[in-house]
Amino acid sequence: MSIPPRKVVITGALTRDTVQALADVRGLHLELSHASGWNGEGLDLLPALSDAVEHLDIDHALALDVSMVNTLPRLRSLALHSAVKGTVALTSLEGLGLYTKAGRIRFSGQPQRLTRLAGTLDSATLEACASGGLLQTLILVKSRLEQLPDASLLSDLQQLQLFTASRLTSIDPALQSRSLQYLRANGCRELSVTAPVASPALKYFAVNDCSEIRSLDLLGITPSLQAVSLLGRTSVGDGRIAHVVRQGHVKDLRLLPKPGYDITADQLPSDPDLALRLAQEMEFAGVHAVG
Picture 1: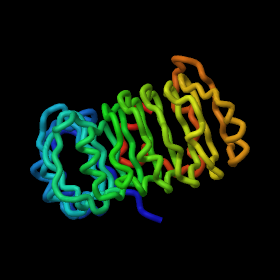
Picture 2: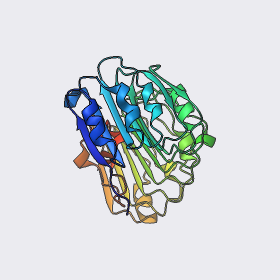
Picture 3: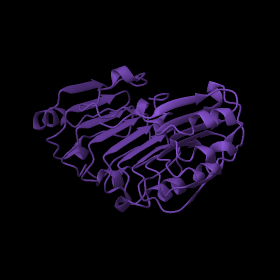
């Protein structure tokens, strides 16, 4: 069993005394957030924590340059929020969350371990981060993205979650992944699907408040399906719901085609394997606020 990282939240400034006290800690999850009281000072001290920090969360309203994160060789997951800017090396990261405006973060190196990606991503960011073809989890949060990258970059995708991706029109490249197990889309009003799900391993299918999804033909043959949710403006009228339920092992079925339905987390099916613990994965820190 893996040991969870030790989380330290900085209030005030990140000082030399604090850095000295943390320098020998291993597996450190460091949070630098103005919401928690961090005043934006001390980024220049990060190199002194090169052997300690494995998970880092930086959030500030000022345009702070966060390029100093590249001095942390043990860094495995990174979350950047608000107005911060800079260059991020992708080579060693396993998880990345970006909740910044487009163009504020630049990238260097090729992703060699990046399997988890989340945030308000634009097309250039998504293509850069997916270029290694290793992504297993992709989460879009209030993204203005219009389409996903080529299917060859998403061939290992297991989890796709979309929260209010208002301009996204198609997710067909992701549906071609034969590893896809978890598909959730909330409030994606322009989203339509022309290709069926290729994965025989799909367990969770939740398409809520997506008015252009009108058929379950996209599910194809899904013997592993355990949970289905069609709430809000999603109105499936092709008569296939009973067929989908019979062919799988559906234990949780939620249907309510009511326009304007307010979807909250407790009205959505839980993950059947309890594998998605997003609130515990720091690079997904923005998801629970909009889910």
